[in-house]
Amino acid sequence: MSNGTGEDTSISGGHLVAKALKAEGVDVVFTLCGGHIIDIYDGCADEGIDIIDVRHEQVAAHAADGYSRITGKPGCAVVTAGPGTTDAVTGIANAYRAESPMLLIGGQGALSQHKMGSLQDLPHVDMITPISKFAATVPHTERVADMVSMAFREASSGAPGPSFLEIPRDVLDARVPVERARIPRPGGYRASTRQAGDPAAIERLAELLVRSERPSILLGGQVWTTRATGTAVELVRALNVPAFMNGAGRGTLPPGDPHHFQLSRRHAFAESDLIIIVGTPFDFRMGYGKRLSPEATVVQIDLSYATVGKNRDIDLGIVGDADTVLRGVLQAASGFGDTGAQSRKPWLEELRAVEAKARDKRSALLSSDASPIHPYRLVSEINDFLTEDSIYIGDGGDIVTFSGQVVQPKSPGHWMDPGPLGTLGVGVPFAMAAKYARPDKEVVALFGDGAFSLTGWDFETLVRFGMPFVGIVGNNSSMNQIRYGQIAKYGADRGELGNTLGDVRYSEFAQMLGGHGEEVREASEIGPALRRARESGRPSLVNVWIDPDAYAPGTMNQTMYK
Image 1: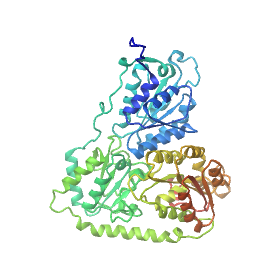
Image 2: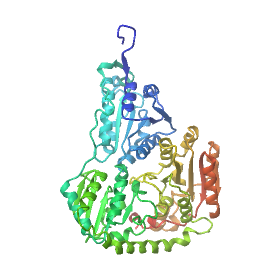
Image 3: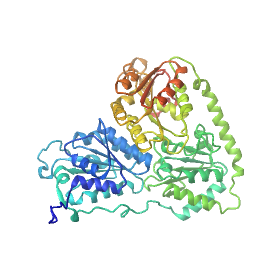
Image 4: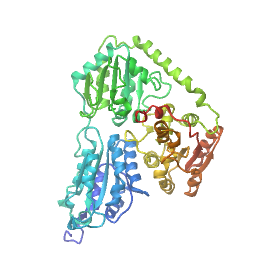
């Protein structure tokens, strides 16, 4: 369409997508190509949005999820119709359970061929609706940018999560007059998402804290999501409250901080008179709330009303942004003449003694020279290897369960795991997202050999885009968390049905794809191999052969195996 001077005043659907992404501050799209979506690439090229093309759509979705976690703004993945979209479903499901905001854009057959059996036609919206916050079809080219902005709003409302848009091929490729297409202005259509919480409830919580003799607080993933780190640290230090961390909340307090606790959580939750749960649901990780003392006063703070009090009764629930709510509690508590901070010193000393006893109990395994290598020795070496600039990623079952007890990120936002869906295969795409978003940071990823196998081919993508990271494979040639359960339930003679893998030298896989690789069979070799991987400046895999008959306590205590 022309304005009479020969100048084209129309715009395509793909270019409208790119303009809407740019308005959201999106600087990269993770994708695997397909004929349905290529006009989006053309638009991204014009808008200066990077394209990182991967080898499997699951990787694209996980990378968009990981990008969101690192940057605090929604990531974006673009995949083609049919199998392209279904391949990405696992990534959407993982982001949904992890409350990670992202947008997946999927292709779709032309509207003009609706229900005619076009190539790769599937009911994507019907499939993705139950595992997303928003899922819709874009019905007309004029609505493309408007609906992209709508999807981002939905992804960021309340407890965040993924959105999905399918764009039919003829809608995406068609051109419409620019003046007829609503293109939201950057920053012009978003409200503040900082929910302050009920002021009366905040005052009540401050009073409970001040009066408490044995409080404890669990800082969950929403502490990082809402960037409440500084406020949470200020609160626990001012009021002398022991803090435990899980998920993305790990690293809120640095190791060695007098209020940082890790190994005494069971004791604390059994003996506390006040337990504050921030940004963590009462799901399986919390024993559905049953691990909390029935005598304790329980307070839950969450972005979602639906999560507060789910699975367990509480004494006080506050719906709101963790940073804003904790800031309000801190201010309210400061109004009391005596906050009780000094009187809580014996409680912290009691917990510190429990921590020391637990650490001493496993100290021999942490320094074990046994061959095959004990997993505790491997994760201890990794913990010693991390710096304040190391983003740590855990991708696996039993080996990552070991690491959860030992590895302590040194800074906020430097811990990544799949979240409550327990998805294996997030390691490579998370490394990709972390290194793209924060090229100044070192990325260290621990894989189980089974987990790495799921998305490991995208190691080549990291090589192709020049994204160095230190990868470690804890290799026991088995899906060992499941192996333990089968042995426990059915006996050793049936303990290896369906869970035993081949003895793969992943170092050679890394080398084949242009990265750095090493084999490690002795515990004394772990540290030097990790340092050489760091110094290589390339994507790397250090393949560490670990004892297949050593299981993490968390694995052995899983109720599904009882």
